[in-house]
Length: 229
Image (cartoon, rainbow, N blue to C red):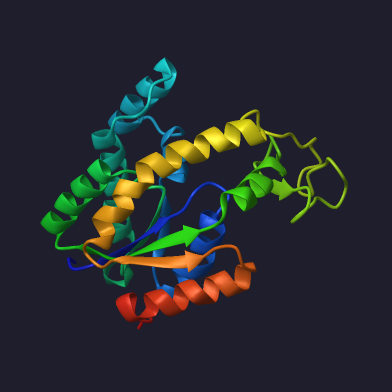
């Protein structure tokens, strides 16, 4: 079935994209599709596309844009097969990251009869992002995440789920975070300009309580996507 409407969620690390995507996608009848998760799932498989992606990982180089797009389209095809007519569209988290990717995505979506219905841009001050990210703790065993201030574990330094010792990522220092944010801003500015020119961007203040941000996103998207039938 063609004619599906997809939503793009854009925001820097620490803006709460993953949290908000998980909350808002079910309410709108969309499927949360995070490219990071797609790559991790792909690494557990042994098909042709998985082997191609693994070859880039093994060499320590970035996966080319066209391959990333193929991974995304493969997932959209799977959703169409698995859910048939109930698949209304995807909430895309982590793609596109730049204007070239956005243009390529538009082209393949047109061929499918699909479209981007709206682009949600989570806006959070840089100082807040650095505070959020520099206090992040991760369980190396099960992948659970915590924050020393906002969501600390029940036992300091230990994962609530598996009891493993929590760690801070080496790239979660304030200096490393600032460099990542600079790269994000350089890539994202032209991407947002591309979507703004088409009237698709909705700016959402992400420096608010989680529930408030969720309701703001829902109110902004419902006219574009509609409630699930």
